[in-house]
Image 1: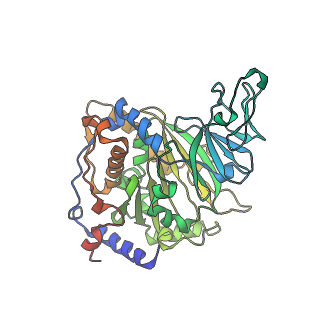
Image 2: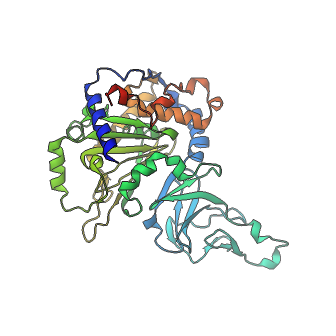
Image 3: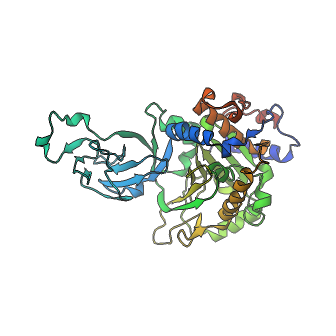
Length: 417
């Protein structure tokens, strides 16, 4: 982030602190329909379009350390086999043998000299090509070239591996847009995997995720954990194309000093700039990634549906090499025994929210300007699903226009820039 952008962000923080209403021209946000959290019709539309057409984070390169290393990934409801190739890349395939549809692997991870289906022994190389079948004399005109494993789009951003089930989807870099440039200072190609854990939650996945995309709730739910270390009135939200969003909120000087003292021995990413060192700089990447990024850790949270009223929270910590010191883990205590307090505050209350939204009294969500990232997410979700595919009572109005999407920002004029 260059000096001009840093200066602009500081000015926007002061603008946010001093405003007495939403920015002039910012649209009034119509209620988000209640059914987007409770209606099976919308849940099926998410499954059919959002999870099928978005780039989804699947693995870190450390989980596929050598040629032939594999990992089974099923978080999006499809069985995906990731494998490290002889050229050093990663391929993704449906974990489905081209003979009788049996799984190629049943272990979560491991290593294979070949990808061999244990049902009838058909084997494939790391490019998914069929190499051999048992009793080939019993097959007539079996064309090996037509019997490869079915591939899944797979691309990497640094050490992060993403998949996409849509063969016509944009590239991962196009999907990220300007965020890819903003992430350069965090050196995702150098980060190591320090921690990965999964927790089951009793609420809709969006309820769990949305708690991490706005600061409106901070003083109520996190009075002793987050509120003292985040200046919510100076929070600056930025909306990007493809449903992504960013929040930047300064850390009070006293809290910043305490944090620096506690982590003085931790390894750092030297290229991280001033904003990430003095503020909470957090990104929401459509559809389900939320992560604060700092000089010491890159810890994404991933939210996966597990039914309309249940979800799985997957916590990660990526970090610069910690050497002989303890592995950092931003989100759990005792190596995954339980979530840290701030996440317990969100997730435990999320389960109470689920009970409330299932009541007869829940009719819709009137979002504030501070919660605009949530509305922006929903607008793009409808664009991805297709307006005509969504029942009228479940749609959101497309009221946030292009003029509010990065790099456009009318607040800069309002702030006197």
